[in-house]
Image (cartoon, rainbow, N blue to C red; front, side, top):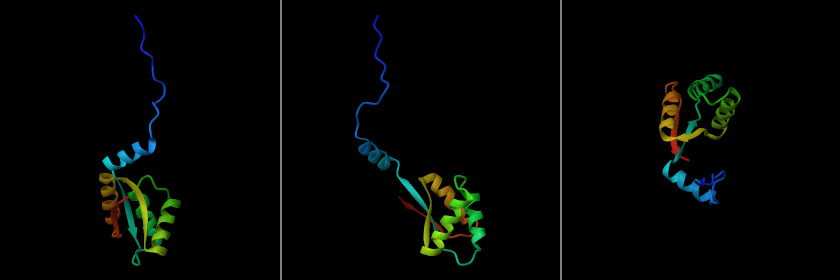
Length: 102
């Protein structure tokens, strides 16, 4: 009885084509924070860190400053369901936030 060969690597494929197909089937969405003239900067940073577990304080500070200086900043890019959850969490702090397809 002969053994089947075991494939240890993927056959040659165009990874760009595969990535494009994956993005079409599972599109990514950006959670966008808008500038806020009503809340203190440290409050915004705390809201971001508490709302998006992947963020650390330094990242949240950068996002807050970008939104402050340019009017908006991308908080995170993820699947739609997760983006909706993060948007809702951030909105619960009274901050302006939206979602757009990335």
